[in-house]
Length: 328
Image 1 (cartoon, rainbow, N blue to C red):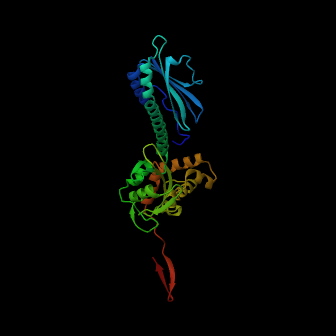
Image 2: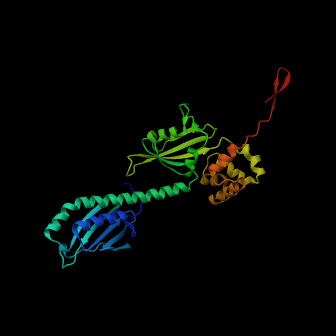
Image 3: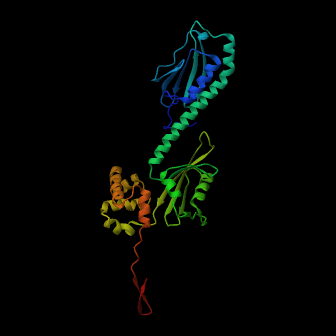
């Protein structure tokens, strides 16, 4: 499993249920007095200890390197590791008055490979689940539509912005590079099945908005390959199309400049660089615009502006055959 800054150490806290089940199975087979586990989480260089004494579970944060047991007969240990992530050992302990018997040691040796595999699988699953929770939490807070798509084309995850785009009342139709019209869901499924990392695909929604999809791919524990699609929706409107309407709602000139950049599909950092202001100022301007227009998100802003009637083009005189006509 690849190392990621989002990965965190597993088996922390009193609610490590998978580990508790594994230890429960070990107790039923070998009946130790206590069970201890220490492991090194390699990305951070920290060591962690997990201990269970009969029905009580004790946990600790960073600890010193695992201590060595002086009497091999009093402990039985199984090592486990995940390349690049962690390396540790689970130790079964008994006091000197109740040493391990030869049949118990033999039983443990038979059980050791399976126990190591269970620990590695449980650790990988917990690290992966924690990373996915953090990723989904970050994606939910984003105003940009983000989707995880399986190779089969089915959507594994969509944040709020993506769900709103997919669940629009009117069927959204895109016109890909080949000129064929298809549904937005079908277009996303095709990207999930065949688009390569780093590619950008452009399309046009039926309502005139431009759509750009950036593609990244990764392998997770459940799927061989998952596509991460980040969608950038650019309004068909320009700032000049909506400037008058914004002014009537009390939107200032600087706030209108921010709205114009949003219509172009720019992110906060890009808007800040263009207008020579900070991202915090961009966020403040957007907050004020949202309040004045009665919306709560970028997607709501785009929908509100796209739903507004466009200004009719002014008639312009055209010279023809010596007579003056109006071009409507």
